[in-house]
Length: 324
Image (spheres, rainbow, N blue to C red):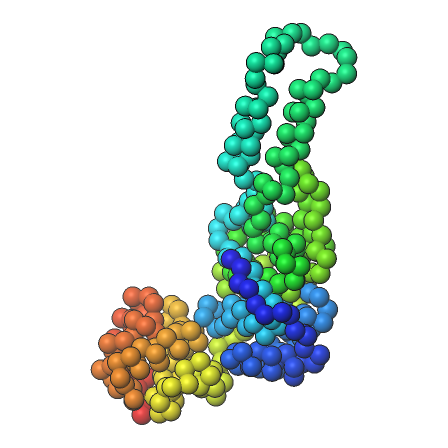
Protein backbone atom coordinates (compact mmCIF):
# COMPACT_ATOMS: atom_id res chain seq x y z
CA UNK A 1 0.00 0.00 0.00
CA UNK A 2 1.51 3.33 -1.07
CA UNK A 3 0.65 6.85 0.07
CA UNK A 4 1.98 9.89 -1.80
CA UNK A 5 3.56 12.69 0.18
CA UNK A 6 4.95 16.15 -0.49
CA UNK A 7 8.46 16.60 -1.98
CA UNK A 8 10.99 15.23 0.51
CA UNK A 9 12.42 17.54 3.13
CA UNK A 10 15.67 17.39 5.10
CA UNK A 11 16.13 14.71 7.70
CA UNK A 12 16.75 15.65 11.35
CA UNK A 13 20.26 16.90 12.15
CA UNK A 14 20.03 16.19 15.90
CA UNK A 15 18.04 14.16 18.42
CA UNK A 16 15.93 17.18 19.37
CA UNK A 17 15.06 17.66 15.70
CA UNK A 18 13.88 14.04 15.46
CA UNK A 19 11.65 14.51 18.51
CA UNK A 20 10.32 17.77 17.06
CA UNK A 21 9.68 16.17 13.66
CA UNK A 22 7.40 13.58 15.25
CA UNK A 23 5.71 16.06 17.57
CA UNK A 24 5.02 18.46 14.71
CA UNK A 25 2.95 15.68 13.15
CA UNK A 26 1.05 15.02 16.39
CA UNK A 27 3.14 12.10 17.68
CA UNK A 28 4.31 12.74 21.24
CA UNK A 29 7.76 11.13 21.37
CA UNK A 30 10.24 10.98 24.23
CA UNK A 31 13.99 11.50 23.93
CA UNK A 32 14.63 7.74 23.87
CA UNK A 33 12.58 7.22 20.72
CA UNK A 34 13.98 10.44 19.26
CA UNK A 35 17.53 9.19 19.77
CA UNK A 36 16.82 5.81 18.17
CA UNK A 37 15.10 7.45 15.20
CA UNK A 38 17.89 9.98 14.70
CA UNK A 39 20.55 7.26 14.75
CA UNK A 40 18.59 5.08 12.32
CA UNK A 41 18.30 7.96 9.86
CA UNK A 42 21.88 9.14 10.36
CA UNK A 43 23.45 5.68 10.01
CA UNK A 44 21.10 4.43 7.29
CA UNK A 45 19.93 1.50 9.42
CA UNK A 46 16.43 0.04 9.85
CA UNK A 47 14.67 1.00 13.08
CA UNK A 48 13.17 -2.01 14.87
CA UNK A 49 10.38 -1.06 17.26
CA UNK A 50 9.04 -3.64 19.69
CA UNK A 51 6.29 -3.30 22.26
CA UNK A 52 2.77 -4.30 23.14
CA UNK A 53 0.02 -3.83 20.58
CA UNK A 54 -1.47 -0.36 20.59
CA UNK A 55 1.48 1.62 21.99
CA UNK A 56 2.12 3.56 18.77
CA UNK A 57 4.77 1.59 16.84
CA UNK A 58 3.02 1.71 13.47
CA UNK A 59 2.31 5.41 13.89
CA UNK A 60 6.05 6.12 14.02
CA UNK A 61 6.40 4.97 10.40
CA UNK A 62 3.36 6.91 9.24
CA UNK A 63 4.45 10.03 11.11
CA UNK A 64 8.02 9.83 9.84
CA UNK A 65 6.82 9.67 6.23
CA UNK A 66 4.60 12.71 6.75
CA UNK A 67 7.34 14.62 8.59
CA UNK A 68 9.97 13.94 5.92
CA UNK A 69 7.54 14.55 3.08
CA UNK A 70 8.20 11.11 1.60
CA UNK A 71 5.85 8.40 0.29
CA UNK A 72 4.91 5.67 2.74
CA UNK A 73 5.06 2.06 1.55
CA UNK A 74 3.60 -0.39 4.06
CA UNK A 75 4.19 -4.12 4.06
CA UNK A 76 1.65 -5.68 6.43
CA UNK A 77 3.09 -8.99 7.58
CA UNK A 78 1.11 -12.15 8.22
CA UNK A 79 1.67 -15.90 8.56
CA UNK A 80 2.55 -17.40 5.17
CA UNK A 81 3.76 -14.12 3.62
CA UNK A 82 5.93 -15.04 0.64
CA UNK A 83 8.12 -13.47 -2.03
CA UNK A 84 5.26 -13.00 -4.49
CA UNK A 85 3.25 -10.94 -2.00
CA UNK A 86 6.16 -9.05 -0.45
CA UNK A 87 8.61 -8.33 -3.30
CA UNK A 88 7.37 -9.10 -6.82
CA UNK A 89 5.58 -11.56 -9.07
CA UNK A 90 4.95 -11.99 -12.76
CA UNK A 91 1.59 -11.15 -14.27
CA UNK A 92 0.91 -14.63 -15.68
CA UNK A 93 -2.48 -13.76 -17.14
CA UNK A 94 -1.02 -10.84 -19.09
CA UNK A 95 1.91 -13.01 -20.22
CA UNK A 96 -0.44 -15.69 -21.59
CA UNK A 97 -2.47 -13.14 -23.52
CA UNK A 98 0.73 -11.77 -25.04
CA UNK A 99 1.98 -15.27 -25.95
CA UNK A 100 -1.29 -16.28 -27.58
CA UNK A 101 -1.44 -13.04 -29.55
CA UNK A 102 2.12 -13.57 -30.76
CA UNK A 103 1.44 -17.19 -31.74
CA UNK A 104 -1.70 -16.14 -33.56
CA UNK A 105 0.34 -13.70 -35.62
CA UNK A 106 2.83 -16.40 -36.63
CA UNK A 107 0.37 -19.21 -37.38
CA UNK A 108 -0.81 -18.08 -40.83
CA UNK A 109 -1.05 -19.82 -44.26
CA UNK A 110 2.61 -19.01 -44.96
CA UNK A 111 3.82 -21.26 -42.14
CA UNK A 112 3.20 -24.46 -44.05
CA UNK A 113 6.62 -26.00 -43.34
CA UNK A 114 5.92 -26.69 -39.67
CA UNK A 115 6.03 -30.44 -40.27
CA UNK A 116 9.58 -30.44 -41.70
CA UNK A 117 12.33 -32.16 -39.70
CA UNK A 118 14.91 -30.21 -37.70
CA UNK A 119 18.40 -29.76 -39.12
CA UNK A 120 21.78 -28.84 -37.75
CA UNK A 121 21.74 -25.54 -39.64
CA UNK A 122 21.44 -22.00 -38.20
CA UNK A 123 18.43 -21.17 -35.99
CA UNK A 124 15.22 -20.68 -37.90
CA UNK A 125 13.08 -17.56 -37.83
CA UNK A 126 10.69 -19.50 -35.59
CA UNK A 127 13.46 -20.18 -33.06
CA UNK A 128 14.42 -16.50 -33.01
CA UNK A 129 10.81 -15.46 -32.57
CA UNK A 130 10.44 -17.88 -29.66
CA UNK A 131 13.54 -16.46 -27.99
CA UNK A 132 12.33 -12.90 -28.46
CA UNK A 133 8.90 -13.83 -27.11
CA UNK A 134 10.42 -15.38 -23.98
CA UNK A 135 12.47 -12.23 -23.46
CA UNK A 136 9.43 -10.00 -23.99
CA UNK A 137 7.16 -11.70 -21.48
CA UNK A 138 9.81 -11.47 -18.77
CA UNK A 139 10.27 -7.73 -19.15
CA UNK A 140 9.33 -4.95 -16.77
CA UNK A 141 5.97 -4.54 -18.53
CA UNK A 142 4.81 -7.86 -17.05
CA UNK A 143 6.27 -7.38 -13.58
CA UNK A 144 3.95 -6.74 -10.62
CA UNK A 145 5.78 -4.67 -8.03
CA UNK A 146 5.05 -5.47 -4.41
CA UNK A 147 6.08 -3.31 -1.44
CA UNK A 148 9.75 -4.36 -1.13
CA UNK A 149 10.56 -3.88 -4.81
CA UNK A 150 8.55 -0.65 -4.95
CA UNK A 151 10.54 0.69 -1.99
CA UNK A 152 13.92 -0.12 -3.55
CA UNK A 153 13.00 1.06 -7.05
CA UNK A 154 10.29 3.74 -6.70
CA UNK A 155 8.67 4.88 -9.93
CA UNK A 156 9.02 8.57 -9.03
CA UNK A 157 12.65 8.17 -7.92
CA UNK A 158 11.92 9.40 -4.36
CA UNK A 159 13.14 7.04 -1.65
CA UNK A 160 10.13 6.27 0.56
CA UNK A 161 9.64 5.28 4.16
CA UNK A 162 9.22 1.51 4.16
CA UNK A 163 7.05 0.32 7.06
CA UNK A 164 7.37 -3.44 7.65
CA UNK A 165 4.55 -3.94 10.12
CA UNK A 166 4.29 -6.82 12.62
CA UNK A 167 7.28 -8.81 11.34
CA UNK A 168 6.80 -11.31 14.17
CA UNK A 169 3.73 -12.67 12.35
CA UNK A 170 5.87 -14.07 9.50
CA UNK A 171 7.93 -17.25 9.52
CA UNK A 172 11.72 -17.54 9.74
CA UNK A 173 12.39 -18.19 6.00
CA UNK A 174 10.81 -14.86 5.11
CA UNK A 175 12.75 -13.14 7.87
CA UNK A 176 15.96 -14.59 6.40
CA UNK A 177 15.03 -13.27 2.95
CA UNK A 178 14.28 -9.85 4.43
CA UNK A 179 17.70 -9.80 6.08
CA UNK A 180 19.29 -10.35 2.68
CA UNK A 181 17.24 -7.53 1.16
CA UNK A 182 18.05 -5.05 3.93
CA UNK A 183 21.75 -5.92 4.04
CA UNK A 184 22.45 -4.55 0.56
CA UNK A 185 19.11 -2.93 -0.28
CA UNK A 186 18.77 -5.01 -3.39
CA UNK A 187 16.53 -7.72 -4.85
CA UNK A 188 17.61 -10.25 -7.45
CA UNK A 189 15.03 -11.13 -10.11
CA UNK A 190 16.40 -14.12 -12.05
CA UNK A 191 14.79 -13.11 -15.35
CA UNK A 192 15.86 -9.44 -15.14
CA UNK A 193 18.91 -9.22 -12.88
CA UNK A 194 19.60 -7.41 -9.62
CA UNK A 195 17.68 -4.29 -8.66
CA UNK A 196 19.64 -2.08 -6.26
CA UNK A 197 18.24 1.01 -4.56
CA UNK A 198 19.78 4.23 -5.87
CA UNK A 199 18.85 5.76 -2.50
CA UNK A 200 17.89 3.27 0.22
CA UNK A 201 14.47 3.77 1.82
CA UNK A 202 14.08 4.70 5.48
CA UNK A 203 12.96 1.43 7.07
CA UNK A 204 10.76 1.06 10.15
CA UNK A 205 10.11 -2.51 11.37
CA UNK A 206 7.55 -3.23 14.08
CA UNK A 207 6.99 -6.32 16.22
CA UNK A 208 4.45 -7.17 18.91
CA UNK A 209 6.91 -9.82 20.14
CA UNK A 210 4.56 -12.77 19.65
CA UNK A 211 7.83 -14.52 18.77
CA UNK A 212 11.46 -13.46 18.97
CA UNK A 213 12.98 -11.79 15.92
CA UNK A 214 16.23 -13.52 14.93
CA UNK A 215 19.44 -12.01 16.31
CA UNK A 216 20.91 -11.60 12.81
CA UNK A 217 18.15 -9.19 11.84
CA UNK A 218 18.28 -7.37 15.16
CA UNK A 219 22.00 -6.76 14.70
CA UNK A 220 21.23 -5.06 11.40
CA UNK A 221 18.81 -2.63 13.09
CA UNK A 222 18.71 0.15 15.63
CA UNK A 223 16.49 -1.29 18.36
CA UNK A 224 13.98 0.51 20.57
CA UNK A 225 11.30 -0.77 22.94
CA UNK A 226 8.14 1.34 23.13
CA UNK A 227 6.48 0.90 26.52
CA UNK A 228 3.14 2.08 27.81
CA UNK A 229 3.39 5.83 28.45
CA UNK A 230 3.45 7.48 31.84
CA UNK A 231 0.28 9.27 32.93
CA UNK A 232 1.72 12.69 32.06
CA UNK A 233 2.77 11.62 28.59
CA UNK A 234 -0.51 9.83 27.94
CA UNK A 235 -2.34 13.03 28.86
CA UNK A 236 -0.15 14.89 26.40
CA UNK A 237 -0.89 12.31 23.72
CA UNK A 238 -4.60 12.57 24.42
CA UNK A 239 -4.48 16.37 24.21
CA UNK A 240 -2.66 16.12 20.87
CA UNK A 241 -4.91 13.48 19.27
CA UNK A 242 -8.28 14.41 20.81
CA UNK A 243 -7.94 18.14 21.47
CA UNK A 244 -11.70 18.65 21.96
CA UNK A 245 -11.88 16.31 24.93
CA UNK A 246 -12.90 18.04 28.19
CA UNK A 247 -9.93 18.41 30.52
CA UNK A 248 -11.58 16.65 33.47
CA UNK A 249 -12.68 13.75 31.30
CA UNK A 250 -9.15 13.38 29.88
CA UNK A 251 -7.63 13.24 33.36
CA UNK A 252 -10.19 10.68 34.51
CA UNK A 253 -9.76 8.51 31.42
CA UNK A 254 -5.96 8.45 31.72
CA UNK A 255 -6.14 7.73 35.47
CA UNK A 256 -8.61 4.90 34.83
CA UNK A 257 -6.53 3.34 32.05
CA UNK A 258 -3.29 3.62 34.03
CA UNK A 259 -4.92 1.76 36.95
CA UNK A 260 -6.41 -0.88 34.63
CA UNK A 261 -2.91 -1.66 33.33
CA UNK A 262 -1.89 -2.57 36.87
CA UNK A 263 -4.47 -5.36 37.01
CA UNK A 264 -3.94 -8.99 36.03
CA UNK A 265 -5.51 -8.91 32.56
CA UNK A 266 -5.01 -10.98 29.44
CA UNK A 267 -4.51 -7.85 27.31
CA UNK A 268 -3.88 -4.47 28.85
CA UNK A 269 -5.29 -1.50 26.91
CA UNK A 270 -2.86 0.46 24.77
CA UNK A 271 -2.78 4.12 23.84
CA UNK A 272 -4.99 3.39 20.85
CA UNK A 273 -7.71 2.15 23.20
CA UNK A 274 -7.31 5.23 25.39
CA UNK A 275 -7.97 7.45 22.38
CA UNK A 276 -10.89 5.32 21.17
CA UNK A 277 -12.49 5.25 24.62
CA UNK A 278 -12.22 9.02 24.98
CA UNK A 279 -13.88 9.52 21.59
CA UNK A 280 -16.61 7.06 22.54
CA UNK A 281 -17.32 8.89 25.80
CA UNK A 282 -17.50 12.18 23.92
CA UNK A 283 -19.90 10.61 21.42
CA UNK A 284 -22.12 9.79 24.42
CA UNK A 285 -21.86 13.45 25.45
CA UNK A 286 -20.02 12.66 28.67
CA UNK A 287 -17.92 15.41 30.26
CA UNK A 288 -16.96 13.30 33.25
CA UNK A 289 -16.56 9.56 33.83
CA UNK A 290 -19.03 7.71 36.06
CA UNK A 291 -19.30 4.06 37.08
CA UNK A 292 -22.35 3.25 34.97
CA UNK A 293 -20.83 4.67 31.79
CA UNK A 294 -17.53 2.90 32.49
CA UNK A 295 -19.38 -0.43 32.78
CA UNK A 296 -21.36 0.17 29.58
CA UNK A 297 -18.38 1.19 27.45
CA UNK A 298 -15.71 -1.28 28.59
CA UNK A 299 -15.92 -3.06 25.23
CA UNK A 300 -14.15 -0.09 23.67
CA UNK A 301 -11.27 -0.36 26.13
CA UNK A 302 -10.94 -4.14 26.57
CA UNK A 303 -11.16 -6.79 23.86
CA UNK A 304 -11.29 -10.13 25.69
CA UNK A 305 -14.27 -11.62 27.52
CA UNK A 306 -12.18 -12.76 30.50
CA UNK A 307 -10.93 -9.20 30.98
CA UNK A 308 -14.45 -7.80 30.72
CA UNK A 309 -15.67 -10.27 33.32
CA UNK A 310 -12.76 -9.38 35.61
CA UNK A 311 -13.69 -5.70 35.39
CA UNK A 312 -17.42 -6.35 35.78
CA UNK A 313 -16.77 -8.37 38.93
CA UNK A 314 -15.66 -5.48 41.10
CA UNK A 315 -12.86 -4.23 38.83
CA UNK A 316 -14.61 -1.04 37.75
CA UNK A 317 -15.42 -0.08 41.34
CA UNK A 318 -11.84 -0.75 42.37
CA UNK A 319 -10.43 1.44 39.60
CA UNK A 320 -13.04 4.19 40.00
CA UNK A 321 -11.93 4.70 43.60
CA UNK A 322 -8.60 5.92 42.20
CA UNK A 323 -10.34 8.10 39.64
CA UNK A 324 -12.43 9.85 42.30
